[in-house]
Length: 226
Image (tube, rainbow, N blue to C red; front, side, top):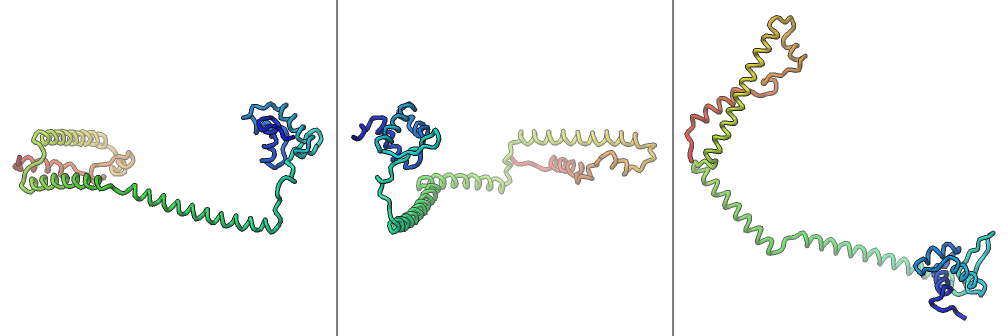
């Protein structure tokens, strides 16, 4: 008599047949936790199924190993196995072809998603036309000699540059006075002494105060348009 489908024996029998591999009671108990079956109930079900010949078992010392009865399965012969292998190879090839086709479709989708819609193209075109018009207007003003910088902004920049140049000039003079006082009676070669201290003049790093001062003087004399 077959066990009821919802009984512990039916659940255990179905699991053992599905697995079709050697199992001990702990393996079965761990896998069937979702059915809320206690290990003792599972052990009893395994023993009953083995006693009734529904499953096979072997004893290894104190441990029992359970296995689905093999006579219930249709075991293919060599010809059938070879045919199954060929079918499996064909299916694997079809699977690879399908994966390749899916990959190509996904690539096309990404390409299409990265392209702008007609509405987005029109919006971008309008924005670019507006930017071009604004730049052309600025260019016309520059060609006409119109200063695009507000007078107050220009004066603020000039004052800041003038202050920086004044500080630069003052620090150069302070350094020169201090250097002359230190080296006045020094027996050392001044160039070697300077290198020893790691001192660099403006000219050593390719800058000079004079061109900036001249630029400020010329700019003050130049007439400005508004």
